[in-house]
Image (cartoon, rainbow, N blue to C red; front, side, top):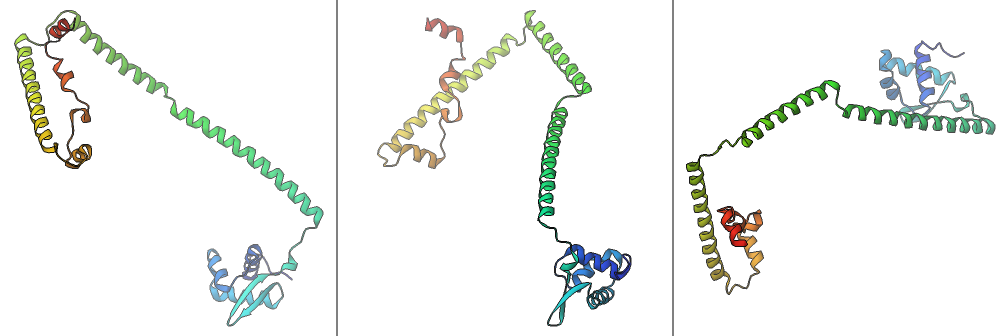
Length: 226
């Protein structure tokens, strides 16, 4: 007669049958801690079930290994196995369809999350309107002919800029003379030597003396160009 399902033997038997794999008493006791069963009670239940022929066991030295009796499990025939395979295939198809539906819903959710809410759109619109009004105000000031830079200030800036350009040109010439003198008889590859010294030319950093020089008196240069 099988033990009651809520008894210690019933709980242990149910677990061993559910696992259907070799177990020792420690394995069972650890797994059934949620029932507040002590290892001694679990060991006693396992031995009782084994003595009653409800589970199998084998001894390996001092240790016993317990296993559910295989003759207690119903083994399906070929017809039942075929039906189980068909049912499994049907479930797999349904699972695939559900996964596809979930993916589509998740994609739609991502699209919705990427869209701005009405409140966000209104905030952005207000910000853009403010920026447009600010730029229109600046444009209106420029169109009215207001002098933004005084003539004397402009002259000082141009003179300072011209001086810096002259210093740049002078230092560039000095460096070229020194570099030519140093590398005249050097067996090294000049590009590798430059990189070894950590030197950078104007073009290496995206600047041009010629382009910057052309900013001085552009009217005269255009006249000369013609």
